[in-house]
Length: 228
Ligand code: DC
Image (cartoon, rainbow, N blue to C red; front, side, top):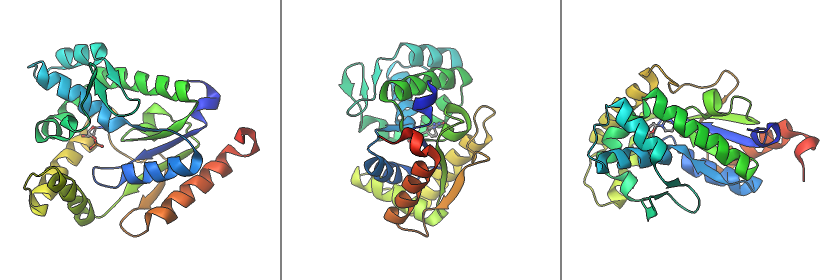
């Protein structure tokens, strides 16, 4: 990554359902930067693993599939030429993604792709779990988004309801707690705030107020040197 590109990065990390995508889009709009949903990348590789009939728990198979996958993140999520934006939100992928994302070699492949994306775009807003800690440790602004368990479960349940799957808020809360435990407990790149991240509670404040603050911090951090 070039210095200039990584200093034009906003890193947005946090657990499932904390509202990262909504905040990332609002910030990107204010700053005129593109967004990269890195969770969608882990999901796409997981879909490829399942479609290949491989075991998500097999690190060698998952790494080979990650390295060979024709994954395009421009204008959606495209895997081997097919739009998989909705397929990656299915229950099979959701159930297996934390297992695939825990393989260090899979992470190495995807982190490399994320850094190339940053260089190609001259910066951007990246959302994920390890953006501020691993992918871009010197991002201009690092945000760790949190929300109450209840708000997170309701938000995800509404997403699933859109996809016409019947899941109760209680089931959702349980599934999310399991996935969070895997994401927080893994030995490589566990979910945690970077030391210099600002922790923002998204159940207490509106989107506009949060996005305005992040955009202002970006301008402050970037100073005059990045203007224009
Ligand atoms: O944000 P999401 O629910 O789409 O993320 C899917 C999974 O991918 C989640 O279990 C955590 C993992 N992930 C990760 O390990 N690192 C990232 N940078 C982004 C997502």
